[in-house]
Image 1: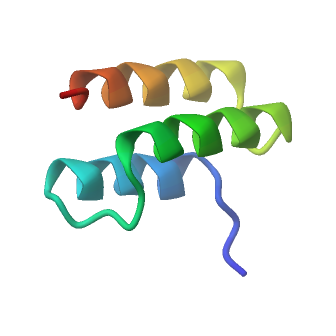
Image 2: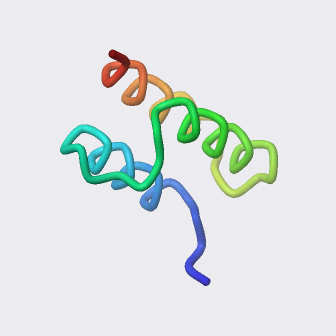
Length: 58
């Protein structure tokens, strides 16, 4: 299984923007938070991902 680090989630947010993500907005928020809590992404990466995700909020 591929590591679900920063690059994975960054691309998944792009897929959400394009309507191609297998996740809904709230699922991505929770999964990215889980990745941070599991130390798979840094606090800076978490902040960048959340900022990008917030831009996609509808």
